Length: 445
Image (cartoon, rainbow, N blue to C red; front, side):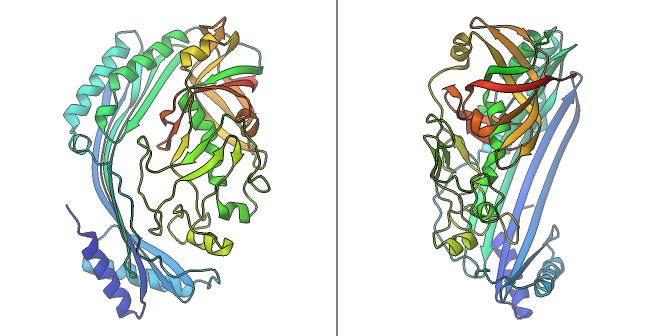
């Protein structure tokens, strides 16, 4: 059922004023989500949900708090406003608290596609059936998901901010399994026509076939070729540190490193919500317009993200990367674009005398937050490269690897693509050929 977010906000403002509160912020989110799940070469679940979420924040004399509900009748709206105000009055005042954001103009982005919003279960089922057939006909077993979302997000406040965003998203993920081997592929796009389930199924099936009867190699330092999903899985762990609040709190590995070269000269990274392969709203959690940031240029740390409060404390302009208040994290870049190069993965393989090709990573945990060292494991397609060719699958490795070292040892980059990882976090990233990647042991699964 369609909901008029502006009308809901008017009710929020009236309810707040009745309580003597002038500053109030409304976030209204709506979603139409559907998912087809399959395993053992058969569809076993189809679900669809329509939902909405109302979140109200009050600000009273330096205090702020938030309350939420998914009920939109007048009594529930009035109740959530009263709860937000009551919570606000119980909090301690913050000397750095700012008034609500002022109105601004937002550079538009167009990421809503009718083809994605209107797809039904029959069409998803046909695509899944075709993917399953491709895997099953090769003697393997398929499992995965095909999901489609149509989401809306509106932020309004009593000072006149009116920020609206709507987006569609399609995701297809598939794992092909065959005895002691597996292969995986995943893609996402705002326009479902940019996602090819059959092509992804064939990729997963090929990886499962190529990694059959995997060899066990000794741990050690190898030249690795990380496909874009693996680059996302590991490099994506560091971007919460590109935050003024994290740096001020002493929990960022960038403390004392801004303006210094910490990666190789071939590493340049932007935060760019307007990139053609990116997604997300052109404003942040307070309604501040997002700015394009050059996080790393030629290996040198340049820009960091500032929410309004951190920017005021530093005497700079906010960059539009703040989270909805109140929160303890402040801000972070969320539209990561790692600049690519011109080599294909095939060319990287051809130039590698002996190395490891990695499809993706999992169970990643931080070992040293300041040196940015992580441990984790390879999975779903790990291969030995010899004499410029993929010659065998190999048993999966555990790694122990510092990101600063890894991104200083990049010898080649592919063109950047939209990469999808284990969860829903995506970014634009290339494949990377990296020397001296540190594998510490062979895993037993």
